[in-house]
Image (cartoon, rainbow, N blue to C red; front, side):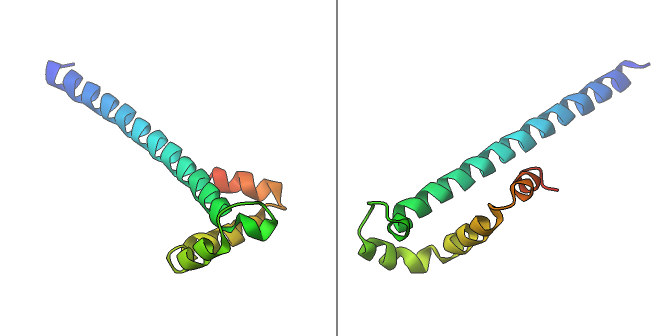
Length: 93
């Protein structure tokens, strides 16, 4: 084995490790984003469930900007009855 082949193999090995770290970091950020979206929706529209939060005026005035998040929350809440589907969604199956 020549020295240049060794360096190329080492570079490929470390590039693979770097890509693995990138993927894990992106997965962690996506999970954190999902949690933050849920908390944001709960803060804005918790009054629907009877929780004391912001006034309804604030939630209604922000509704045009958070339409996508509300649709995601509603579709996620429909899936919460099926525990297996929640884990399959996490595993991206």
